[in-house]
Image (cartoon, rainbow, N blue to C red; front, side, top):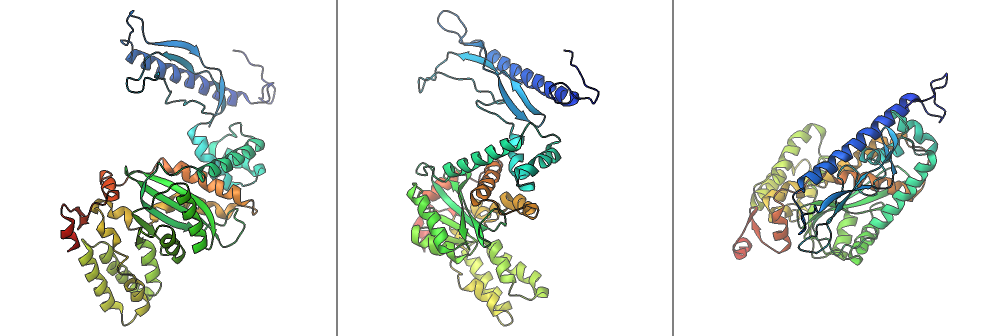
Amino acid sequence: MLTVVNEDGSTPSGGWLLDESIREGARRMLAAALEAEVNAYMAELADERDEAGRRLVVRNGYHQPRKVTTAAGAVEVKAPRVNDKRTDPASGERRRFSSAILPPWARKSPKIGEALPLLYLHGLSSGDFMPALEQFLGSPAGLSPATVTRLTAQWQADHAAFMDRDLSASDYVYVRADGIHLRIRLEEAKAAVLVMMGVRADGTKELIALADGYRESAEAWAGLLRDCARRGMRAPVLAVGDGALGFWKALAEVFPETREQSCWVHKTANVLDSVARPAQPAAKRAIQDIYNAEDKDQARKAVAAFARQYGAKYPRAVKKITDNEDELPASFNFPAEHWIHLRTTNPIEPTFATVRLRTKVTKGAGSRAAGLAMVFKLAESAQARRRAVNAPHLVALVRAGAHFGRGHLAERPEAVAA
């Protein structure tokens, strides 16, 4: 196809020949990939035929063209259509072909979807968004300031729907809770983002709730927990928190039957604040002996050893451990394979590390809803990369009330109690 090129290298449509060539190449590659995917699907099912010997899976033209935003810009795609006449023996419903390359209703590539919240942090105003997009992706990818504004509104709607969804079908056996302090688009200087992540009965990890709360107060946490309970959330077996009194007070009010486990990473940092810097490395190793113990009895011996070694010089540091000694080793009552997941809330941190790195370049206060929506989209994109807990099959046993002694399933619970 011949194209008229102006003296400055632009085309009559207002673009540049190189950009249009890249987009055309992307369009052709995507079309070829979709054709190959459909052909492979049909070849695999070529032997599926009806009583008359006719194939049950055949081509059926193309879907209506749609534009998909990629890193190369917006490209128009016509996805092949498949007529699959087979039925599911169990449900009796018609089977459907679904492209793994271009899912139904997809309008942008995952790369764009994950980049947008990060770019939003880089330049919060829609006017600054275009330079940020060019810096990250090499081109504006056909996204205008108006498009960014619409995306922000969509993120807010997604966050609102997420926080209003029904939780009765989800069973969170373990819950991690933490307050993330971000100086981005929050109306109060001391506001925090309250985050809860859970481990479902099948061992998968999932974001439960994300809302703002002043100073991580008991009222803020209680409001979030009550809202989750109202939407059908069942009391978790164990909650892991950073030691903030507000969360534990709220947990005791809303889910009194849930056991408590303090985060050892936060606890260690808090204890070491009361220890002189030269003594901190040795004290840290002594604290690690507590939470890395083989069982609860060994952990208690390690606590006693820590008290003997540091009680005289650093009584405040020792008091921070001995005051809630019974709660610190709660994870020992659960499968040993899960201990590494239950000792800390730190898996929450990586999701928000990128946000913290970019808060210094943000400008303006913005709106609370927009800030929360942006954080939610970052957490949502990170969720796909979370792996299940070790030995996921044991999570359902924990929910069922199985007893574990020294990290192993006990066939005789009375032996554990003894």
